Length: 472
Ligand code: 5AD
Ligand code: SF4
Image 1 (cartoon, rainbow, N blue to C red):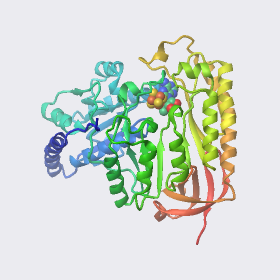
Image 2: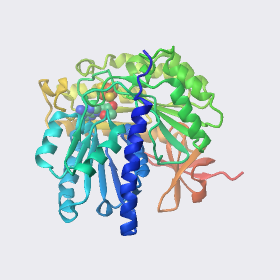
Image 3: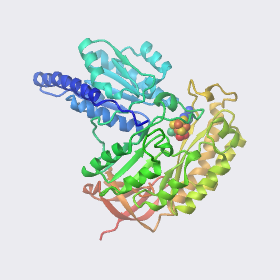
Image 4: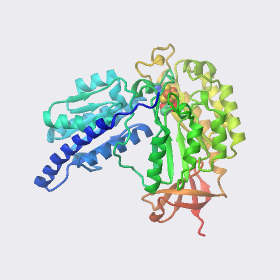
């Protein structure tokens, strides 16, 4: 089966709705001597950030202008996340605040989209408690935003359009990229892994890969526009290509992207340890543009817990895998995700997690307290851990992890690295990234943003390096 795509007729139909809204917005501009303003808030991961770029692109086509001040907006959209409870609570908190804004400004349109909207329980709460939400759609029909907004504007009624599952991918949506020199590119959507704690497979649907020619075309266009670094996005990039007609794997895709002239760096995330192939490790070792960094979540170190998490690897096989990666790709940095407090994870189990941290010596890690997600198998498991015990475990993990990250960081001191300059902070310092994804701060002029420079690393903190530019 080739990748299923939303038809170009459907995409064009949406463009027609965009133009209709644009003429309404143009009218508004003539009468009020200002454009209608949009405010977009993005919660969660890079997938959502990328979706928000598409939302911004569509709204721009409709004639909206961006504002960073929520109070000034005529249209507010929250692109939500539900991977952990606190992400949801933030959305509910903000929605409570919007109620007052809407009272003062009834013509304001409030929209919600993203992962929370794929959760029935969240939609029930929104419909019951947050009646000031005007428009909502989920992760499968983002491309329909113009039609849904037009319906809301024309009818004045609340519009909820949430699909349970959809296999078709929307290509060629307009989008406004956050950066001119680096970009994220979706290579696949959804996840079939069903880790027992995780809600993503329920809210993002089954795995579906984009055709390689569409990915290559997008990257070629980005490079023409000045992009030097791409990050390929997928919940599990190792299974890229499954279900496509073409005979392709993620490693083969990397080889094709590596051949793109003008592109300098290729990153990707996330890889699942259960199916990281030798073919991929070899490709990473060999391809000059592929950054020497891999994000390889291990989640927990205890084998019983890993089994209950449905991760399909063991502590030993994970450690072996990282040793193989280090052997084949010297100086690679390995980062990870860790969950603390999964059901049944007591002191003994946490000590296995700590053991993995010591053996692998991660360069960085995202650490999360386990969050019970309704509808996932783990939510109904016995031996849920108390918050107090979770926090104890969490602190123990950090006590071991942070000095290791510091040690890995300090290994850069005294060496010179090529750095892509990203942003200039208020303190005048530029922040940029090394090939291995380490963050570095150094003095420099704003005009360097988007350029590569050589930086000598002079010092380090746990989570970033400090350096100075080498003038040539
Ligand atoms: N509780 C805590 N962390 C979670 N993650 C996913 N689901 C949960 C949950 N229910 C973490 C995992 C994953 C990362 C993106 O989020 O570590 O790798
Ligand atoms: Fe969630 Fe596991 Fe899929 Fe990652 S691989 S998105 S943790 S189910």
